[in-house]
Image (cartoon, rainbow, N blue to C red; front, side, top):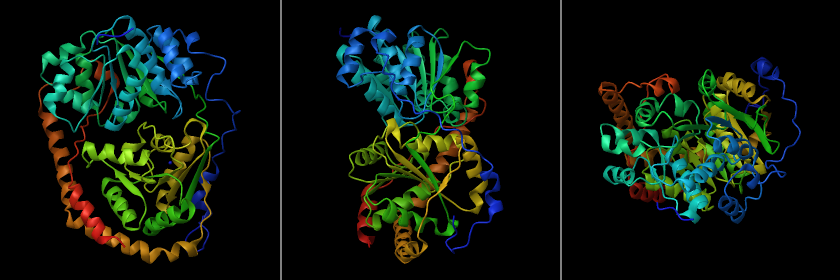
Length: 499
């Protein structure tokens, strides 16, 4: 059938016990029996999927459904609105893409389904999933994301692909005031909110999400998927025809995931990052999560100067640069990816062995999302968090969230000290390099543009979220808009300053 369309003080003194008292009161959750990720006694055919989908799954090496797939596919096929919760790397995308393609093959038209995701990179990943699954029936899929030509993307919507995968900010910008484009969604069958946690449902995307919901039919099927069950989803469930499907009800930590911490003062954490990458994880693929955009680029540049195979990922890059960085890391041409939380949002990078938290996430859910970049689909993985006395309360909150204590990673202070001079020199060179290319000015311009965008949206008529948006969100926000830096200038300067 073809359609027509991620303790010891360096001084050697023990960390004061009272600092960790509350943490030690947290009892590790009892170990759950080891469960297979796959339901080997269930086949895709038994779930009610069309024969061509079962055959496609077999060709792609999907012999049995995962827990989340087996639990979600039947109710989605039955037309129910669901909120699916499952650990990372468990096949959530296929849990909704397969039933959507099943329905689409019976009644092909565009726009049949809309998938909203928090970041561009996840949009490209979901798009490729739909294309691979629906290739045999000629499914048409398009992504609507920032960093691309406005008029071309308007035409993409007007062309009415079967599936649209979008970031809320860009889609809302395209729909604002354009009633002709809004008509493309009049017969929408299914809306999916992937990685549907607080970032997508409340803060940054509040107004855009509300504007999108206003043009969608009320009769649509709505699906929420996330690695965490957030307060937003719990509120949505109350009083609504929404079925919560929890494939990880106890939210137990993966048996293959080791969660560690290194207790060092803030002033030497960058040196300890160098030490860990060189002495503890010299061959492993690592994602280093930075606390800010500034720190992300600084660490990327410093590690490059030190001779590491490294690439960076943050919102100030152009779309082409971001995709190139991800491609370089996925292809193992770079063993280290330094990123802001943009890389903690559902991206499927299978071979990540270590997640290093240079900057602690603000809450437990964000930690879970970062940790989810490793130990995927039964593979072993480590999460290492660098913390100081200032971070104790936040680490305790994370430990309460995951139901277990982080373990101390033994380190050798004398080895770390030997690297201090080299680290300091590389850091100074990196700072000089970024100053030469005007990186601080670009960040200031970027943040100024964000403020201006927020101001304009607050003043725009009809910017208040209405109807469905009130059910989904509760605070205003704005769309991030990245600016391009000069990659050639940065590359030349890096070569000039390398040790």
